[in-house]
Image (tube, rainbow, N blue to C red):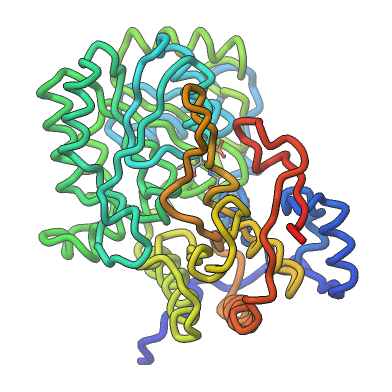
Length: 460
Ligand code: F0G
């Protein structure tokens, strides 16, 4: 048998994609204000903007969609959804939402008081923004290795436990309503967190009486890395590892648009009875009754089925293998990438790729724009354009540790052939990298989530 693992599915439905010319793309970029979120998707050849809500559902999920019970309250699919989430997480209560950031908004608007602090390995941008919007202070404390794209570490998403304890001592536990761990760590390169680290953070939280929550978007991918890389887990089933991961937390927020393999959905799961009551009350106000939370019955069914499929080990071997394949192709071509390759994406080290462009001119965004111009591939920047912000007290600009271009892989959507095209395009771009220019923001640069709405131009 060959060692190569091809896609573990056959393709039953196809969606045509079309190429554009370079001249068309130059015009499209200009109209879009050099913000790739503004590009019509039909003008994108290979779309690696995000792995969120962009996956292909299985025949089993589509079959489930036809069994949607669209009753207002306590529909059949809710019971299946609730039972599945409880089985997987072992948590007591489940609150459905239509996506992850609503789960974050509900949670933080309910528990945060002014000047409270929420530590995490790395907050995702919506998590950070939801904490800030509710008067809180988001703090990142990933291990030092997690900040350096060139260092290899099997669990670069790990929390710096010493720093976490210092933080708890500095602010006092009364100011820390919960500690979060993002699995896998998206803003830090899709890097996993080890079970040992989860256990250590739990022990610290127990010592100080602070609840621990996961941002659980990519829980199955994280569990697969534990199986592959952590001593003692090789012979455990991914589903057992998942259960063990969740046994250490008091709750989680989840965007089902990632590892639940659906186009829309999310939830909060938690053990705290009283907090659940408060969250449900607010949920009814902003999302809907607490057995649908902004979703249709059919959506709940697709999530329930997707959560189980995501833990299939053939699927995960292919999924993590696909990212590694693209990462290896780029490495072979000399393109600098964050090491090791993450679970859902390959992160090109834009600061190194474009080392003639200063951070203040957004090397990551320049690379994103140039990649689209060159070959119609849409990626996203995770770096200074997304995260650099002015310190309100000193007026100084704080830059993030890394400037990356993320090539996020939608689940079960693109084949090895598409990835070869992406690798070839970047190889060609790398050869002409010195001709690329930096960028400046000309509109909406002050907004918290500016990467969605800003407009830019090249620095001439
Ligand atoms: N947490 C993490 C770690 C995420 O990656 C995301 C979304 C969210 C929370 C918010 O979930 O989109 O359902 O509201 N990440 C997407 C991305 C958008 O492209 O990485 P959401």
